[in-house]
Image 1 (cartoon, rainbow over the protein chains, first blue to last red):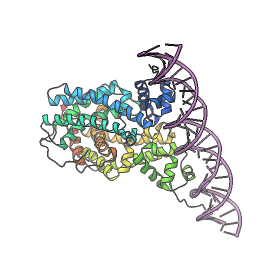
Image 2 (cartoon, helix red, strand yellow):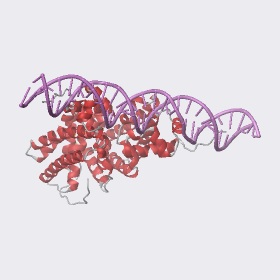
Image 3 (cartoon, each protein chain N blue to C red):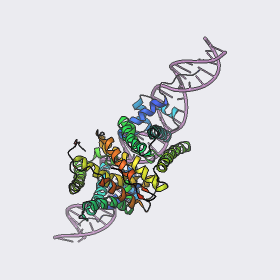
Length: 206
Length: 206
DNA sequence: GCAGTTTTAGAGAGCGCTCTCTAAAACTGG
DNA sequence: CCAGTTTTAGAGAGCGCTCTCTAAAACTGC
């Protein structure tokens, strides 16, 4: 009992991802997304409350896709060290398979106007982060390292380090070299193997 | 034989740095910088050929300040491993001392409109990068690791890894925890000690 | 003081973007 | 076919930004 949509939400978000990959968050204007998708601006405002909502949606959708696959990769191994290495490797492999979404993720939520997001998006993003940090904490326990400092070191080894390799290569339009996964796995293993054993140091918020 | 300036270049660039730290490159508009510095827009266009030139200047000035101090830190140690650790630690220490400039550097030249820069700025930026990579290559040689892959691993250990620690903590307006230097130095050492050398891994002495 | 130079000062044109609003189009259950 | 609903379609107001342009101000060497 209604007119079928010519432009659905996913299609518009895909266009937004493409623009973000090429021109950064600043290039994701309502007008540009409409043009990229071949839709009139009215359709955009029909789907999204405004530009902040569009930016929130495209960020959250992308980061959740990444996190889902990341947690899946972590869970695929019984041995904690293996799981960690697989996670680190997965960051690179996912980036290789999804270069546009990766370029988007190399920005941060702040660049996508986090301060102006509707509250629901902010809590959705926080929930996703807690999910990941929870798993990394559990991994730390299995590795015999507990506490906030352990989580920090593990995050560094299994997320930030792989991401910095990805960032360096994708910057200025480049692409990932074939050996990137191997380098990252190697380095992540080295960091996991030098984790300070017992936790209980100075705590700090994140 | 001329009217003395009320607003000199440095002063305007300082204002631009402040804006970039708070609002990112998108916030560095000619109008915003003028307002931040208390100057009329005419003064900005008198000093800079246009917005691309201003963005180029503020990026290059900041990155050169960082690189100068970084190379100085590397050169302060005779032992290559010590030099590397000092470099990694220095990234964090400099970031702690210069939070606004650091927030600017956490973006990339692309975010500051590199494509639109006057050619002179592009080559100045490249020269600076070559200087740093040259030193990192020399450090690799002193560590017994040669070739482009060694430079990549060393860059990862001594620049990208420290920067990713800085990035995570400075993101969404946070500040660096006291132990950041120690974590970074520790991790950089672990990565340097597992650099692939001619005969495989070089174990870290106990 | 005067000539010459640099710099301030800000008005205003032009442009692109956000967002609103109106009208029509396209479909469906009854 | 009709009533009801969703969606397209795009015009246009309002706003901020870039950049140009004119006029005056402030200083120096002579």
